[in-house]
Image (cartoon, rainbow, N blue to C red; front, side, top):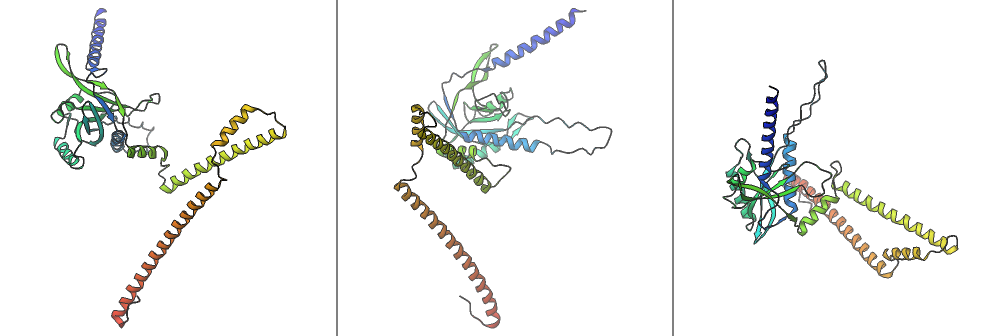
Length: 343
């Protein structure tokens, strides 16, 4: 009687170990296709935006208890993180696959399938705008690929015989330095004597064009603070520049006082330190030269001219509106008393 529970536990453990082994067998570590994947930042931004919107819409509004009853009721547990699905589009040139963009798809969790009519409609629309882009695969969110993902992967094989699977991990890991993006390919492996499709990891590189670099740099440096407007962001940017110039001025003043004290003999002369100060001074812009004064005055006059032209344009527009109002008023009086228009 004492041996039966131990045998039962051992059988449960063996089943769990076998399940883990099979799960690891279904996902190889690296791909052997030899394809080179290039991922654009727009795809990462689209997937992240899609997940953020769905998550914010799925969370119930925060309600505050009325304080009645014997004790405060515990808040309900947070809902599980939703998964989002979509397609990735791009171009394949030989052995190089470049993923440019993505679009969202409708997913039915009960049947683990995608809305095929919606997919065909989106594909037709994107084909009109981007005639050179093709559906390369699909994307989703999660910490790892799941068994149900293979059903979606097989369903897209009639569009692309070898689709790619882009997975975004939305969980925050501060220790991770790499992007939480994983690209999977599908390969046919023999497992337990049965040929099966499994997901294999593929390496990728981030490829950007000039417009994407400008957008990413703008998002990284000009973050909206508490929903502030563009004027608030500009004021914060100018304040940072002013602080940097003020700090530079104070540091230069320290060097100036140090050199004066060294010239008077209060501080011993150090040639190595003088060479460092000389190299720093060469990096500073020479604002006392004639060329700088000419360029500065020219740019200053151009700025004033643009300001005056904008002021004249605004005054002319205001005057035109005032004249239109007078004409409208005189037209009404002319109908009654026979007066002519003002202008």
